[in-house]
Image (cartoon, rainbow, N blue to C red; front, side):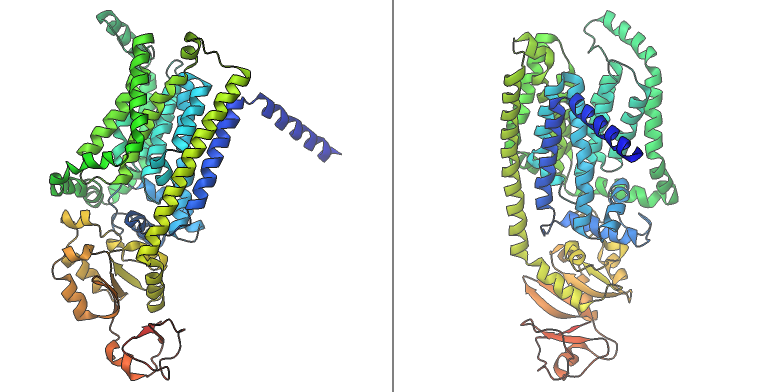
Length: 550
């Protein structure tokens, strides 16, 4: 009887909460769930995204007990690896497991943009912002990729949302979390720095930008009144940065050289390519209506209502563009940084006071119709984005046949052994470890001088390294490396275009001799290039096309 009463009470409570929750909140939740569903369709696809391979190799090495920076080379701040590690372990240490973690953290951005737009402009603005971010092609793509951009941008949005919610009513806890999430975002990816602009604006100018000298005097009084907020902002920053400071103190030079030094050197090495950044922006032409619309709305609002919120959000967006234009090298996945500022400023079009001033008091059927229209528009955008992302993924996997290469790598090596490669995705698909120092063999690291032939050769001398997969061509930029590999490893599979799989020659028994001997080797089996199942080497017609397998 008591259990039945408790169940009835719980049911009654849930019904009451459902009825009290505004319709726009349920619509926002519905849009977010649809976005999650579409992303879940994409996550399992096999792609040859180099950065995903680097992060996954770093996660594999880190979760095996190697220390970040001191052993595991990592060119980014530490929090992306630290935040993804639990997902990676629970999901079986695969790229897909890492992607699920990224998807989870990307939802922080959806919640944050809803809270940000809602606090500035009302419920309809929140709904518009959720729809725009959920189905934005750049954010969609990054939220299903094991890369740092989506989690960093999500934390950035949450930080700005907390600051905006403390704008008119000072709240120490919200200010603390603004500093906390901003710092977490920075320590995932440094490029979110422009978010400090709206954060400081909302905390310093609760009544808008000053327009006259007297206003500046008044603002000083307000600042004096709100100085406790900045104390809590600083406290949030300090608390969030504490784990990173501990890591830094363990080996300051290693962390500095990898996170800062590499990018400074790369900026110099790729300075001549800065003009190419402009063409990269033109490649995301579909974002132009967002930028133009947000700019027009924000300027119009300022002229009509002297509301500077939109201008500050615009400044956030345009500052992000400037940061990316300066950055070298710039890649397409970086461009997601520009999205939140423009979406937040565009959402001001749904401002409650604006709608009332132009005599568009939306109620009843009209509100439902507009909401339904928005749902249809953004669901269509989501479907287009899903088709684009899935088509790209399937094309990439089909063209490169990386799963077949991963099969060969898996068969020729054991999980306890190391593989050196310039295409880390394949090593992950084969469930193979890479030496911690070589999880990142990017062109940026090579061009900056952070990775040399001597560095790679030093790792190849480790007897745990039993295979070299020369695949993406990045190793071609390291003089003398190929000669060393050919001298100490045997080419067993040629994939064309200079792509070769080498394995270490067994002591006192050269692989070349074994392939033609028909003899049985302890611990090895043979499989021919036509796909015959692994079997003892003797008696299967061993030829130059027969390969040794563990």
